[in-house]
Image (cartoon, rainbow, N blue to C red; front, side, top):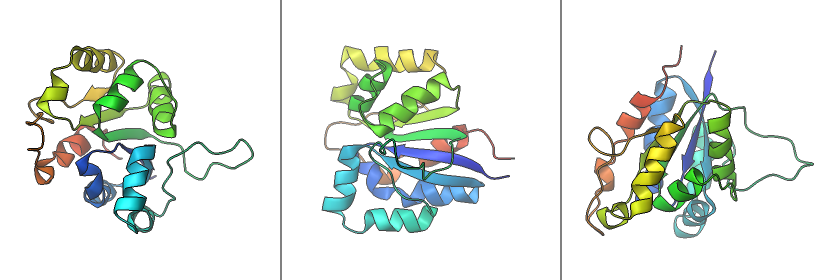
Length: 181
């Protein structure tokens, strides 16, 4: 039986490389669905036309970025696990506060209450990392059961404008997910 992974991505540079984790997750046995924050969706449609279509072809599912209308059917299977990558400080801080004003936030906020396995792989710089709310909110999510891969073995913040998206540790995030039987 195939398990479904929601890959929820925020607007940070690694979001421009989603085929990498999609292919790896599929190779590990996951059925992958992509959910983008509204800003990540804007990047994918305005800055890189054709990206959404490529992701839909790769996953076999529509890419979602906004809530559906009550009269519309669900188009994605239920998630068995969630990977939030890249996670930005904006989404981190809203998520830890329980805010669900976007589809991405609504799913991950609800995911905690549904006891879904959730892995979060941040991407931010060390100036953002120095804000006191960031580590307080990482702790909040970890206490709620989210595996936040920040620091050794996960994502290590870089100097502003000095990140290397090729070094983004997608595999560490995939390895932190439960195994697909």
